[in-house]
Amino acid sequence: MHRYFLLNKPYNMLSQFKGNEKSGRLIGELTFDFPEGTHAVGRLDYTSEGLLLLTTNKQVTRLLFEGKEPHSRTYHVMVKNHVSNEKLQQLRNGVRIRISGEEYYTTPPCEAHIVPAPTGLPQREGEVEWDVPHTWLSITIFEGKFRQVRKMVAAIGHPCRRLIRVAIEDMELDGLPSGCIKEMNEETFFRLLKLPLPASPAGSGK
Image 1: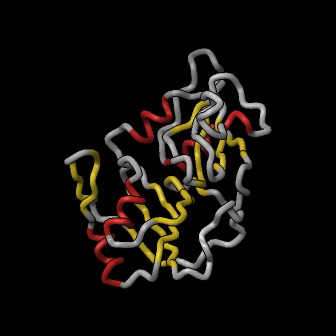
Image 2: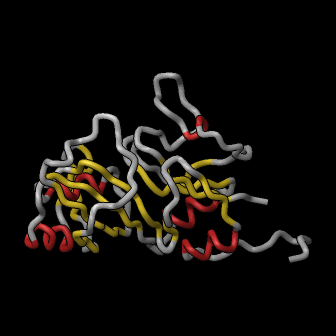
């Protein structure tokens, strides 16, 4: 039977269980007894924080991020300086970002709003000065190019200072503290992610 977890990934932690001593902090260093075969579904950058799904079910990544049906991801993003309505509308309409080398990509329309600063965030070592002008944005996208959200806000002239994934579809952090893990049952996990529930194995009695 597969198992399913939600992690509020801390800042400066890799979205993986194994690495060498120079890699940085790993999920496996958390004080939690994960079953063998647990892996991260998708990734968050080393310096990004927030919702990260973990499971022993290898099909989840394919269903969620590689299928024809797109699934929403929502981020709270702290950016430098005050964001004007004009810049916000540029973000909503789509912006041109560099994928790699000379390859560029124009992002499709997205949801973007100015939001209050999240409460209860852990202070980070070397945190940016809070008296420097900044804006918190909520951004919802349906695809995930490499460092896409960071590149999107940079494209409107507002570099990212902090990035937190707060939801994938209806799966939300819901107050889970940084570094903490919540195990979920299969039915709830798939329902909140708007994925079809796997068929029960033959002879399982379900």
